[in-house]
Length: 244
Ligand SMILES: NC(=O)c1ccc[n+]([C@@H]2O[C@H](COP(=O)([O-])OP(=O)(O)OC[C@H]3O[C@@H](n4cnc5c(N)ncnc54)[C@H](OP(=O)(O)O)[C@@H]3O)[C@@H](O)[C@H]2O)c1
Image (cartoon, rainbow, N blue to C red; front, side, top):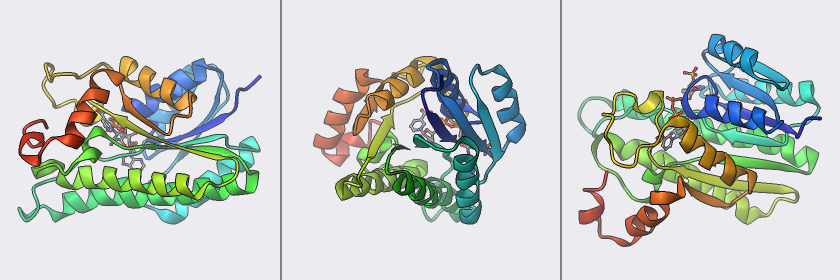
């Protein structure tokens, strides 16, 4: 019997694909979306539970509502929505690449806002649900150069989640996951020996464990990111700027 239905955006690669594999192994049915639907179909064929796939660009607000509603109708419920689709583009501000920063802001913040709206529409009607926002350790402080916009979007989505948690919507839990460095397409250009980078399976295992426990906040993997997170929050910016 199905353990429930998990909807994951950005499931065509990296952390999203691996979360799909690990949640399917736990017995969940899956509603998967991303723009590269061929990848989603290949993933569906390898998974043991019921999997529905749909093409979705999260910057298309109307499509986000349509696709989420279609998934809810197809399964009769959605128990958990994982707002995972993300973009790691970016350039120092004022260096002629406003397009890259804008694209990151559109996917990571406005896209997450649309997904949260669509998820909460379903959860309010069901009177239950678990909203999971994938933020980043970079959300904890302002980051420099090509990370500036990305980190700001991730701080923005974490604040969005906290506001929703503060609303105490009956039956609705909200979790924010702050991953450290986990190998994926987003960082495949980053050199192999980056300190603390873990492989996709290990990193996602920590994410899935935190999500299953419905933690309100989780820095993952806990080692080294819990102590690094504490240091990031306390240290002066002159020190933090050397950490990323
Ligand atoms: N890997 C890390 O170390 C790390 C650390 C902190 C936070 N994160 C966060 O974790 C999440 C997943 O990242 P990842 O590392 O797995 O990156 P990834 O390997 O690059 O995967 C990103 C996913 O997002 C989807 N996506 C991008 N733009 C989209 C759009 N406009 N509409 C719909 N889907 C879109 C992509 O699918 P399509 O291209 O097929 O649409 C892909 O499935 C992101 O939110 C990222 O910021 C990752």
